Image 1: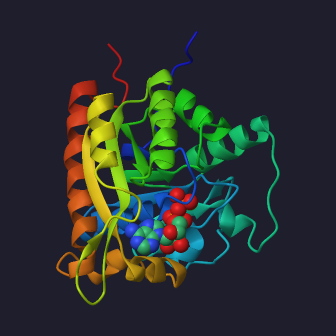
Image 2: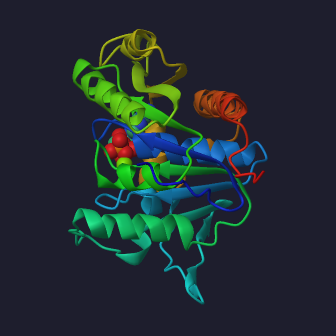
Length: 271
Ligand SMILES: Nc1ncnc2c1ncn2[C@@H]1O[C@H](COP(=O)(O)OP(=O)(O)O)[C@@H](O)[C@H]1O
Ligand SMILES: [Mg+2]
């Protein structure tokens, strides 16, 4: 029997960002889209649910320890986002090694015991693959929709298809597929180089009957922005390098509104 799902109080849209494979740019996309949503005037939270490889603190240049408020945890504020990450609680290079039940309880604490406040969007950066974290979240909490990030390479697409199937099995609606590292513009000639192949994301989305949300090119500045805690999106909607990120953010806004309209209000109404 399915347990009733409890919405996160004050959060309008909860969106998970997953991938089959690691290293496809899931965290990069999540952090940048979150900042773009914020720049477009929305209240945004970012939950780093990649407990094995929590990269969100570095990408946002945030390394404070969260403070408790009674039995609740205050999220860290970074570039106008509310952020929670295992990286704040376990800084440094030592890994956390946890079994399923502990992952479940950490996820529940991150979702329920963090003072997220009023948010238009809570983006959840999932660990790669199909594991306990996503299971815990999907079974306990209504999700507006899932985004799957992939590169155009066949091995990434193969794993992305698995991720889509997993969300289907968990009855989580798909917001759509994002193709990252779609192409590289050669610095001198401006020639487009399809490092990981071409068109795979769009084709896969079509084959699977899910929306294609857009593509993000492979750009050195995006990598640098992630490494130094100043993500590309901070350059603003008009900066050339940030344009595709803001386009993605606008598409996410539209798709989330459509998904919510189909499902009805996420707040349970008693009758
Ligand atoms: N569009 C991009 N252009 C340039 N570098 C990118 C891009 N997307 C991701 N990267 C870089 O690729 C690496 C992996 O990205 P990351 O977001 O950590 O992937 P994941 O979260 O899927 O494991 C990082 O060094 C990141 O800066
Ligand atoms: Mg990551």
